[in-house]
Image 1 (cartoon, rainbow, N blue to C red):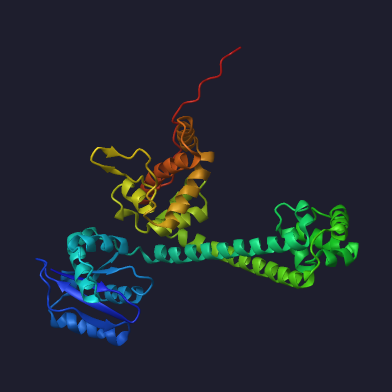
Image 2: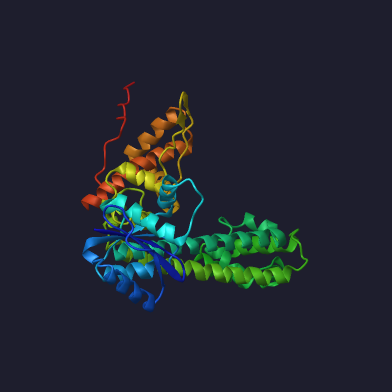
Length: 404
């Protein structure tokens, strides 16, 4: 049995091979991250009598540079484990206290880590689940961009038309954006015909707003204390931002449709049966978990999400203030916490657990992290067993009301 460690880089990868007893098999060698390099890797492995069926390849998940090599090796029958760099970094410190680090040393160190981990190392999730990860993370990026643009639009309105926020809630509602795209400044609104303002409001609100709102808007526009200096330039920017927001929101909608289709092909589809978990939360959680069977128990998933409690104890000292470790996937941690807040409001079992922690004096976020840990165990069970959620009885049965 051979254990192959590959130190990943953008243009060249370095390989170190160890035998079953841990002894290095020759010297480390490098190959380029292209077709010619991959071909030379196969030739070198063949020359060392390394058979795909009798070895395990370990590589760090360094950016996206490992993906092409991973795909190539798995297509050629190799068993490949993708390793979290945090794990190898901790393992490196157990091997030597000297600050000696080269690509060759790292490659042999990864091979040694692979030898110790063996079949317990993580494998890449199925294609649909991995694709779901790309799309959900891209969706988060777009949502973040929309939020940033809305903040910028709000800042412009606060400068040129501070009274505007009293008429719309939320400030950038669909009806508000429809109006601002055509009439972005108070000067534009004040100078426009009342019928034009009324029409834009009716179109944007689908008939909810009409002449009354138009009169209020024009009155405020004429008496605004907003800064008129460079107002037209800022108005141009505001109208452009509104167009970008509407475009990106449309793209997020298209992404949601594609994500929902991919979710249906995974075991994560069962998560939407939990009250309070919709397709967005279910998709992010499924994408970040990958293959649920790689987590032997709920505590493994909890640690992977970084919602486990840290421990600080030495000698006679025992820290009493345990904080969330936050050492795992930030995306999974975010989704579990947000989902927990939604689920505890709709499902009595989780709601009662949250209330019991609050009754013991726990902070809202401490209680919420407790709900998230319970939810993680349920999620793991549903994905492994491929079944829908069955409502649980409340933790504390409601007392019957006393007759008067």
